[in-house]
Image (cartoon, rainbow, N blue to C red; front, side):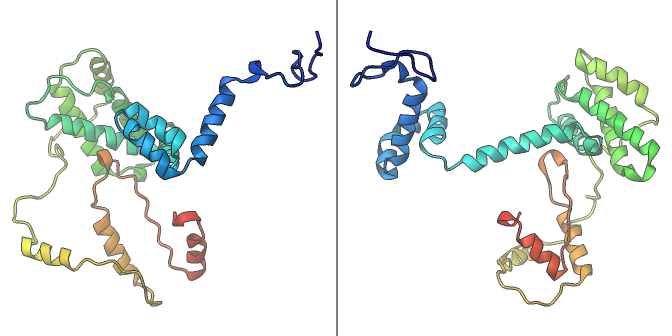
Length: 270
């Protein structure tokens, strides 16, 4: 046998001119395919692959995973967001965001018509647990929790357990809730209170004229903006809705030129 053991793998090395079929692994095949796809002109590549990939969700995912990395940042961004969500869910300081989210989900279930006899089993235990955590925080530091928001959470949960069928996980959450209740629910925070008795303060024509005035400003004066105007703008912006009413916003104002230059130096302005 005209061969010797290779120093790295320990398997016989092929004779001169003999093909190394055993070394042609699946990984090498994949790398060869990727290389060819990456060096294949985009127009020619899409002419062949697009009709095939567009016909199936799975093939579409494979197309963007192998032949086109255009959505790579979006894929990573979603995973980073999910990872951060899981991490922050374990931090007690963020529990009031999660409480607001889950109570809002309960609130939506309560106003459904027709309303289901039982709903929210997948998240009601978490909602009650976070309500207990926020109560403990309020007892330790009364100024750390908005009293109206806590009353809203209480009234919604009280209404939920008063009307829903207590079975399974809902029953277990109900037992915890019964121990937590400290006040009788007034019910005036279901749904969240708003004064809708009078007519809207702005007529349609006024709203339309305001929308027509909207424009994009791309050049600015060096004149500073009064903080009073900024605060008024934030008061309006704070009324914007968010997913499941979590309202996880934190507004920061940078008005010092030197500090502003540092902020603008952050990649992509984020």
